[in-house]
Image (cartoon, rainbow, N blue to C red; front, side, top):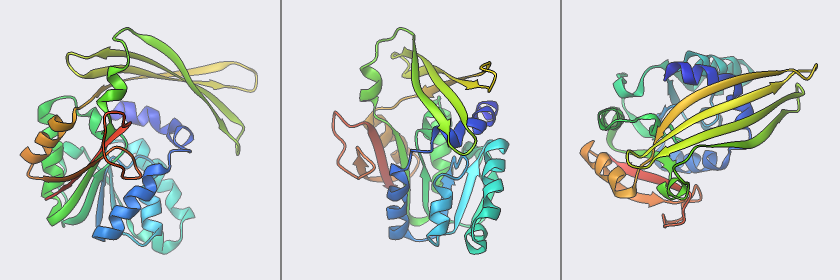
Length: 255
């Protein structure tokens, strides 16, 4: 798992430059709960930094040294008080052990789907619970299973998008191969990034990864077994109610 995220780090900001809809959502929860905040799977700081800019103390956890190094490199470009609000922790969120307790914890943008087994899922959720203050809030965001069940079980190769970095002129074509094991609720993927050089040669990076998808009540039972009470399930980052055509499942649970 670490090697996948380390290899992904070089493409992460470019690939997620337009993924901003959940930033406002987590800002909304942070205003409700206050600080300190624990982010499980912070990546390069896509959500961490906006929260810190808005005055929240954030402990940003990631298993990947490369992801954290990319976030660490951004801190000197922030205002000193913003950078001071960010604490970086390299750790496996299944076995997290930190001092202090948090008012809000969250696991954003499908990060929890990397937990393939029930043991890993419960270990992650129990770790989140241990680190919350009594009454603290935990938010976990995963893709709705509806999005997976529409896809046939055969393998496909898709050009997902062309990525352009205006500052450097860098161009990357992103492909995805996907194969679904619906019996085990696993999506087997390979993320393929083709970087075009000035001489028109291509450097290809192929990153295999498996994701586990969840059904609503399965996820609610996991949260309850970890000591949470599920308060809401949303289908969008605008906090619309979850329905059969929702793209996402966003669980809001309280310790």
